Image (tube, rainbow, N blue to C red):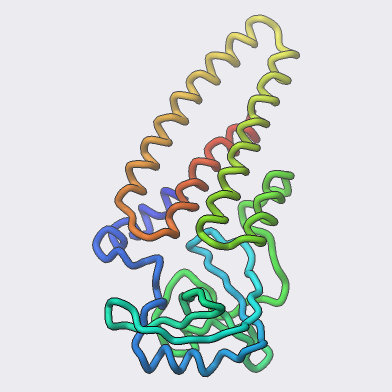
Length: 230
């Protein structure tokens, strides 16, 4: 994820514009009211934000719809008293779940135009119990705080398993093999710590709450990879 961010140009975009997380949250008055008219109370919309780390969409039952003016003279749509980003909002239209921002003709990126009726696993899901835990956890709470908490819990699970499999492997090795394993693990720990510093330094330049779970996810992937390798 980290290298994809750098080489796809997101680093430059965020550092200069600082608005990647909120693609279509603060919009023009006419756009906000038109969006509100397309959302029906009592219906269901779907929230799906791949850049935020979402692996599956989340259903939201619409109880209340409001349009509010922001401090920047723009407007935002609120569903159930929570501001939404139209780029990550999908409504059912003509039997299809369509991206609301795209329906309004707004330019957004890194999101699909349509959602499938079937929830699918994340590309990085190996079928491992910790991957399954993370996917279910994030499906229950897709807020930035919720996703970050889920990733941190998954990180701890991978770290615990890494220690477990390391001890299991060590128990079946001869003295020379144990020495080699220890040296390799010590080198990996130095590599891990260096990668963590790199991640922190790069994400420090990013603006937007969406990068908090992404940063946690990059840290988790390093430990996950080692656990599956050892």
